[in-house]
Amino acid sequence: MVGSASVHYTTFEQLFAAYYGRFVRFADTYVRNRAVAEDFTTEAFMHYWEHRDSLDADLNVPAYILTIIKNKSLNYLEHLQVREATAEKIRGHAEWELHTRITTLEACNPDELFAAEVMEIVTKALASMPEKTREIFELSRFQNKSYKEIASQLGLSEKSIEFHISKSIKLLREKLKDYLLVYFFL
Image 1 (cartoon, rainbow, N blue to C red):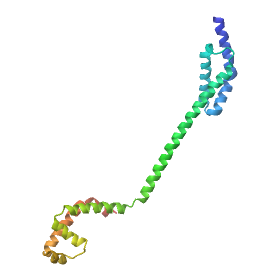
Image 2 (cartoon, helix red, strand yellow):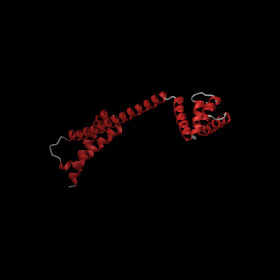
Image 3 (cartoon, one colour):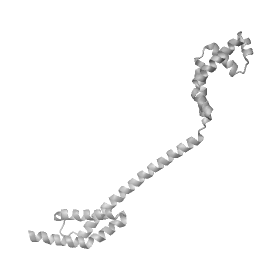
């Protein structure tokens, strides 16, 4: 039995010496990675050696080993292809998302944003005012009526109109304090 094992080892050693370099070059031609090509070739030789007893006696051993290397290389390249396709999809999505952010930012008009927010705050502040104060403020600011005209229309004194306007402006300043600071700095 010892003599038979040494004959196989010598045959394997000769097979390895004769084909290893060629098989590595073959795999490297496709996978373009010398270390991967060497791993595939070594694994194919090991697979053959581990399964040699269960293989047909008339098997073309170099062709068998090369088929294993071919299949490992194909699997490797298909995996790379999937990885590249996924990376391309991710890059495409990232480019779309970046383009969307740029377009949205270019279309953004801070004046309009502030104006809309300020109007919402003013509307809420006016709604929270007593009815008479709100009415006086709206006549003054939205209809451009003078204190004298408002006093005459509502049957109040000009001092009373001045008090209500002062009260409403104080409330609006309080509600708009953050925007007034920004406006001041801009």
